[in-house]
Length: 226
Image (cartoon, rainbow, N blue to C red):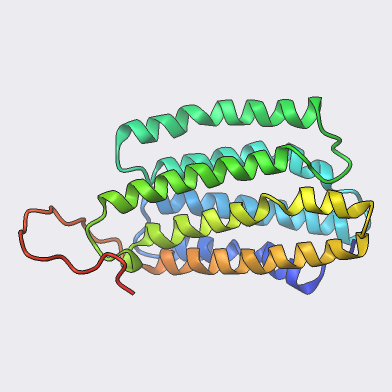
């Protein structure tokens, strides 16, 4: 399958938040680790697109790289936790996640075709970890959400992982029935990626402000803040 223009744009989309994070003055540890994850995605996508462009099977690449990409994403999310226990839980989950990914990849799945198990597992873990982190931050946050970097960055990560959950199982289903539709699946996923990483880029541009102490008894503005 020759990659389309949309697929190329979606593959390079993580470069935008990574570039902003590296050059923005507010380089917090959480932002830096998200930027590292984005650069890993860019490198993985570049190799995958390069192999696909010359007709070389690139499915095996995902089985090799997903544990690393997922581990980095989980560690990045741990840096956004508001409590030490949450950070510890996500950190401990990393080796478990990587081990399970490797077992599924090499003991159950066929690395020469679309993933039916490990890709959805990888994405669902990131969705759950991202939503957990998103809710924890939302409960603790006193500022309007729309002005907070975590709202856009973690939200973008959840959108990216959520739309990636069904891409490969659907492609595997279509491969034996309607293979001409597989390109549509990847193009739709690329559009979702563009939206997700645009949101993350916006989040990287948000200023990092000290959180309110919560001591005032005056009425706070709506935390949605749109």
